Image (cartoon, rainbow over the protein chains, first blue to last red):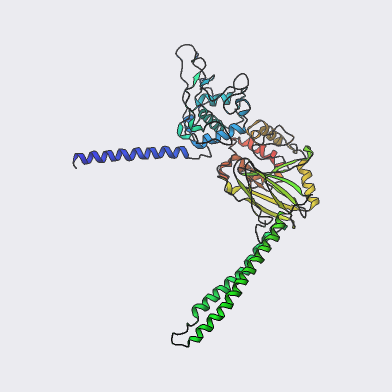
Length: 188
Length: 315
């Protein structure tokens, strides 16, 4: 076979592979996963909520479960519904904060990664945040955490919806600008 | 369960059935007559060109009269249909001052049923079951806070949409006791098909007794297992969405379970309500109603048995 033919063939192969990969990502975004089949969860306590520690700061281990829930539009949407049902609005309003801190800004006392938000919901935090471990099933906590991430534009853009549930004056989730999470001590 | 438009069990459904019958049978006769006329027109012999010209003229004269008669017939029939529809519509829209008030809310994917009362302690909230007394008009107020649903109880009345932000209404005057079936008739999401509202029409005395039983607080747990089940229910994930009156569980994101064991179905018609199905439902709701907002509560086998023992006692 001539070499240009082989080159064209190889390029066509790459293009096809890229297209398939793109299609696969698209499916993942839309897939409605009713019963949890995501990666197994790590034992609680592995999540670090800050960088203030002696010696070399240890990074928060990233959990595959977090990325799994954050990258799926169905989970984010369910999280939006649960956020209302479980009365997160009672303290955090619709993300702007009230007697609880705002969730749509860049400031995170206990970390703004999905693993850290999940840990905050499960473990509770001082000055009012109750622990929901044993109350909200783990999958639903991940869904809520994924929705909370979209409030500051930190979930992947392709999962955030073009609207919001119910009446809202805020822009659609897909148009929220990304605010890079800062923990309180790292911003000082 | 009767589930048929042409087997009416209420005044309103009867009005609809009357219009249906009143249009169907005359139209059937007219349709058959038209087909016969068409067949005759195709079959009859056209007069040949060489026949006497007077024959054609005679035919034309006859047709003029026939067309006039046909026009009059059409006008008379349509007038009769309009009159029939008008008279029956008045029956559909009639309201009685002493009607029973019922409020039905469409949820995803189940029905919340309330019997409002001026005394709040006598108000009844239940789910996925509608009880009505025979012979008394019920005004069913319909509302939704999520998407558009539509309530259809074919044996009692036609469809009526439940529209977010609006209050719609349906009147029903049942005339025969029995069990009927209501459905959601407007596609409303994943589990639209499992959104059934079983309707029980009973004698006024039986209805009053049922309402009184519904007003009572939940039955206290009767066995040690049920007591443990109540603790799991109140302290675990169940209480985040469900309410059982007289206990610490008071959330209204999911159906009220105060008298769960007295209801005919689980999961709004997804499963029959008995011990085995309740166990199966709690062990894995998504297997029986994929997409339902009821999550897998992840209870241990012992907790599952205890919770089922408790829920079984909620008569």
